Image 1: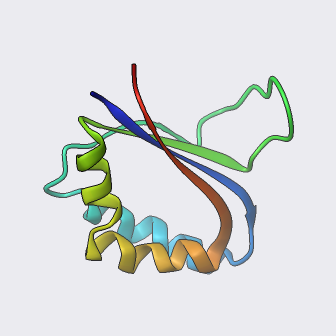
Image 2: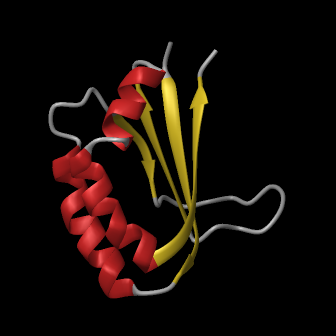
Image 3: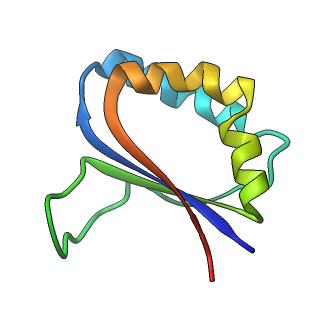
Length: 95
């Protein structure tokens, strides 16, 4: 069953750290069955406060999503995201 990770950037703290993250995150997808569905595209807010940005990535299963997210390669790069901004990240299974 397809599984999605939805990242919402709530607020930027350090743009330099985010730039480092964005320059390195693509490499972490190598060898993982991932499809990027949305990445900081235009938003139409329907309810609540708008996040600064949204990224949605699709994996074929929860196990595949966790394999990427929990991988040492991604966790190393994610440290720059953690320093650079406040995010929410949610893993959700498809129907």
